[in-house]
Image (cartoon, rainbow, N blue to C red; front, side, top):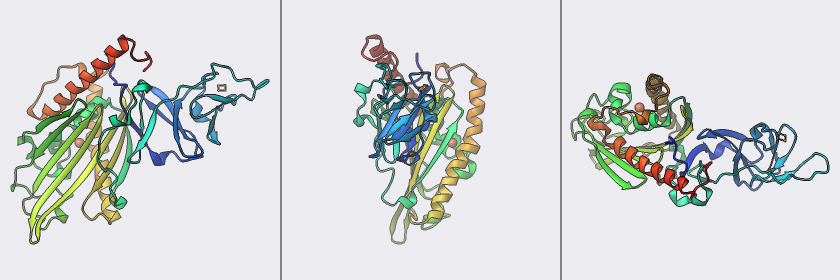
Length: 358
Ligand code: FES
Ligand SMILES: [Fe+2]
């Protein structure tokens, strides 16, 4: 069975990556090279990154007047993928000179592409991430990493908080507290599973990122982790910390929307949008939180996930019967939901309800 769900929105870039009049932007999604560019009025377009003439990468061409020019022999394509100019001979445009276009939309500063059946691309199926770009933009950061790891390995890593006690001892400083917790798991819809995990109340101070903003930084505080999986590979992590202060309860939270998109079988695009409630006006805090998040994935998770990937070789992670621990409850429910969606998609394709290429 395919490892990819095609009928889904995938986050492939930040809107700011692709400006009007800028060079074409290339990104591969589900092993399919794509080219992105904006029309003159700003509308974003996504085409297959392969010219129908001699198959040159269109992303190596140029954009002018909202048209994409092939760098090899100069055919020009509009945003729908139709050839609109042929500089050769009498200029007649061959009927087959068409490039496939894909549904695309922008939300929360993120570019989402639907690689499946275009007729099923509804914006209502975008994951509900709330307001990941809060009104105070000073408290928001974005980051992009390309990970050379199967996206399913990255998903399970993000749905499992317990690894933090081993791989990120400095980041959370929970010193084993997470291991003893039993996550509460809820299936919010056929595409959404949520895990909630409360650190034992009154036993631990706030985690280091929050501590300076609490009324009594060294005293116990209540910490709740809420991790929401949206099919197929969006994981929204929100951490709340509360402590009673002299003027009432003080609560702060950090949100990290982990936006994954498979590039290919063993590589993943990883975009992050992070925001927080404390000291929202201070850019130095934003930079510090961003650096902490990047360091955690690139230096702590990354090497371990790469090592896991190398151990698996060509065996598919999701096909193996891995040993399950109590902390895997959320990942198991998400995997089951994913498998149901994938089975349905495969069934639809067999019955001819989806184009075979999607
Ligand atoms: S390969 Fe694009 S015009 Fe020839
Ligand atoms: Fe991690």
